[in-house]
Amino acid sequence: MAQSGKKQYAVIGMGRFGLSVASALSGMGFDVLAIDSNEQRTQEVSNIVTHAVSADSTDEEALRALGIRNFDVVVVAIGENIQASILTTLIIKDLGGPLIIVKAQNELHGKVLNKIGADKVIYPERDMGLRVAHHLTSPNILDYIELSDEYSIVDLQITKAMVGKNLKELDIRAKFGCNVMAIKTGAKMNISPAAHDRLAEGDILVIVGEKNDLTKLELAYS
Ligand code: ADP
Image (cartoon, rainbow, N blue to C red; front, side):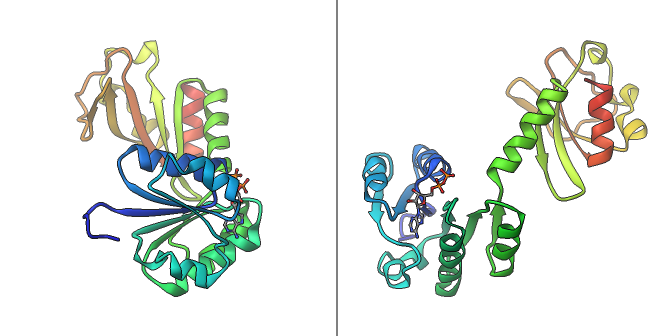
């Protein structure tokens, strides 16, 4: 499967999330195998992805026959059926080979997935909820990405009062204990901003920090 040099992806579960991942990967030019136990779902995606197959991913033989271990990355996007999600992850882990990324329904499901060796556990609903909430409460926060229990990254749209100031004058590190990692100006990104770099209208600051500190910063600039 990996002869072409391009990464090979398999996505299991063609619900809303799985379909979105599979079609985005396909749109980026990658080969994608979509698997769903529901034949109607696989038919619906057959013209979007490279291959679409109806199979029960809790059936080890079926996954073997599909050569799942030869893929570079497998995304397990089974939502509601937690048992199927766990079994599928376990089987693929046992077969060895691919990087396994699994969507979790809740914290407990995520804990189990981590225990059985999922390489990355994602919480799309929770994470998107967080992003929307931060944007709603402080409209200058364009994005919010949780890095860990303690740390996050925010994209802060600079306010009118910040235009023309440089990073030293803003003094975000001293005031809030957060670090400006980058300044986005349109499509350009300055990834090593200096203290004397001046901000222009429309600039976005990419800031990393402890969650509590970022909350203070969000309130100050909301
Ligand atoms: P979402 O919340 O992202 O829409 P869903 O839980 O609604 O996710 O959808 C998950 C998909 O996974 C469904 O299309 C379902 O048919 C599929 N699915 C569930 N169990 C299995 C399984 N054992 N093997 C393959 N596909 C499965």
